[in-house]
Image 1: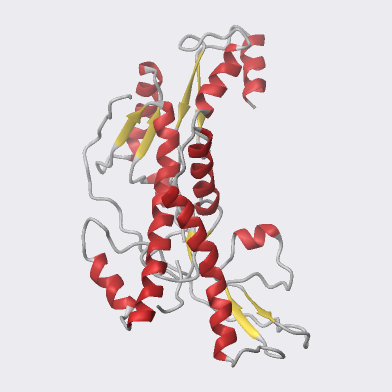
Image 2: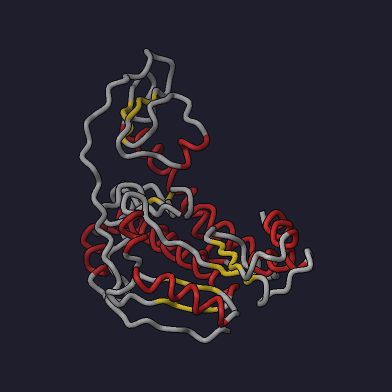
Length: 308
């Protein structure tokens, strides 16, 4: 795409200054790579174009609201000209006082990965707490509510369950781990988060088998939130839906039921950040579940699935 844009701009000198905005969640350094490709077509950065990293923070189910009233806007650019234009573009959407944060391109790219990875870490941490609570006889729901009252922690993403999913949390955690490795660093905390998340998925099956005395042969299980197909597609596994149901049969038996329970819409209870003035940064137990299409903390009533 960057090469295509570069060819178009180079072919018509009459095309004036343009800003190339990258809203995707991309590896750190992507803006620099795009700039290099455009410069390879003889275009001068700052004169004919600028590249801006502008990650989105939309949540599934409330994406339109998040677009119209973003809780924060991150603009990554080293160009004062591009920063002023982008700020003017977003100002009508942050009249309630939510901040517009202007940083360098690499910091902007890192913000999205860091945010999603931190939320995934909260989910895995709470799953570990739940497992310890079972062993010591504590009630994880009481523990969750108790620590959630700490304003430094907050109540979101603290519901224990079978782990995080969605289309963003898994890939963004892996991407940040990979980026660290590429630069000679082992991100031990996030590697542990991944390991906990994988293990947590197996715990549910193990508990079901234990509950039925070590065998589930001939039994049928209705799974809420799973695509109504016995062999879900890759995309279906990535993005489970709350409104569909299917039957899983652990041993050969009759075909699964096609009946679907009626489920009410799941409201978003994400609490917006407190109102802040526009700012510019220097450029430099129980098996419940947890989710942000940034990730999905399955069965977490306070988690919100992010669409980006």
